[in-house]
Length: 426
Ligand SMILES: *Cc1c(COP(=O)(O)O)cnc(C)c1O
Image 1 (cartoon, helix red, strand yellow):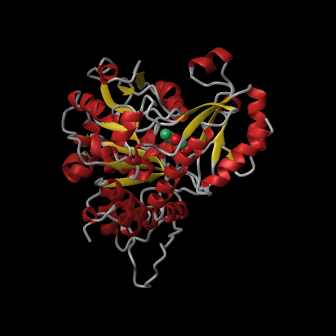
Image 2 (cartoon, rainbow, N blue to C red):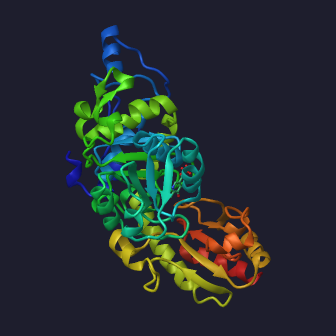
Image 3 (cartoon, helix red, strand yellow):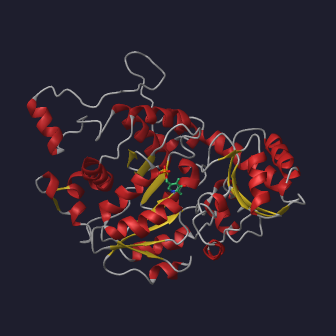
């Protein structure tokens, strides 16, 4: 069956589903660390990368492979690699492309964990991260030089739901001869947004969020679009002799899949941030309903924001689906239904009354999570941004009464009622 001809809804169920001799429809979990080699010659071929096959679960596992095949089909990439978390997916991508003395250019609107990996840990490894001063293509272009190895943005920024002009920033990357890497966690596994349609060469995605969808496992994925030409002298570790494999040139051996192969055979081999086959099973279950969940959650979000913005104890509601939102136009262009399923609101009152509100919620849960089947409310002033001074919090755009909400799969009217009863007690 040619996946390209099938709709996303069909691919999320059928891609990577291989019914074996047992006839089992369920996905088999292979809880094994190692694999028997039929002959020494066969083992040697596997280790030389001249034959494909299972070597060791850190490198490949049949359950993980089925999941990777489904992800690659959903995104339309040439290959995918599952990792232990979204953070390790990002780390593998960056360290596969850049080394000490190189730099990468990144959006200033990033998830806090990524921001810290870039600002602190990568710097300690000698990789300089240049954060664009603004959001325009020129803000990125200005920072590029001949040691730049990639440009990185989020398709929708966590937590502020900023949607940058992906297509124009992709052009800046390609003019500079470097790949455009997009963290598409808010794009729901490629369903709400697929960055490959807008010039991305590599996608990373925190599968912990939408792909899993039920808050049951951590994971990340890397998807290779197969679009970048690595043979431009900037990436000798991909298009030159590879030290780890007796001088094998990955670009000559694997062509369009050279990058994802590099991430697996060097990155995963050396850093070991692999996925448990049980977690890949959970991810595959989650994927079967991804589009249904995402459609429902976007609709719920719209119902909830409309109800809350009229409430007298709510000062303001910010959602990219509103026409007056500064990112509305980009969201309409890049996101199915013109908006994601995350919004923020600022309550009247102060930090104490906001804490009371959060603690009075009965259905919505106070957690740091998005894309879960449970509605999640996050209060940055008492969690993610607690360490900041009042002045720094203001500079980061975090009001003491700001809340971030990711509606789940409950009936939206029950969530509205839950918010209303908690607001009454404030
Ligand atoms: C959560 C998140 C990550 C990190 O993913 P983990 O699976 O938690 O490691 C990276 N980027 C974005 C946009 C996220 O929301």
